[in-house]
Image 1 (cartoon, rainbow, N blue to C red):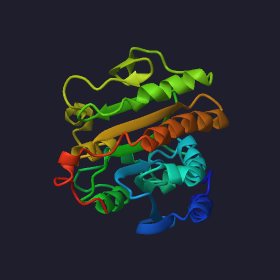
Image 2: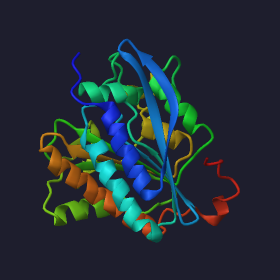
Image 3: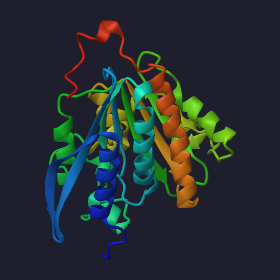
Length: 276
């Protein structure tokens, strides 16, 4: 297959963005393909005393480029607002290097990496990511995705203990900026309202679709994350507009962090897993 993008160029852009805000960019593993080796990277940025533990991921599906593009802009925004934030960010800038290069949802071997968590014989990329997450849990897990069939944006949110309804604020901000929101009452086979998939019924990790392996967000939930948000920009719109929509949501997420809304309860402090 012919490469349509350069992963090495993307990494260099991330490296420049990380350097500009004082974040670290480290290699957490390497895997082999018939066309050569690839590295998986992780970023870390601590703002204030880092009490809100945040994991940000994108690039899981290679045909969803608005996530990686928005995250580069998001890093610059993090740098501008770091004095407002009290958060420890662990960032996965591209979990699927070969899919990114080939413009495929799957990886080079045809595997949907977002169904490879918590399973035997998982893809090398996910084995690297999952190993790096061992023993960690987060107050917020934030994933940037796209839906290539949609013309309106939608979100998924799941929270423990009545966490802040950040998705509602994101949808309101999108509407205020004039961006389209998906209005269906069923999205991806699940109940939805006002552009937000509603987690109801049996736990999502028990969904039969995930019997072989979990998506990353549900794996993080199983491992103790307190709040999940997944953004799904509409793939049928121009890339620049999708990046703008992702940034509207990203900035609302930063606003919510700046207010300390994801701070763990004091009662939880002695029972939290090690985060790093």
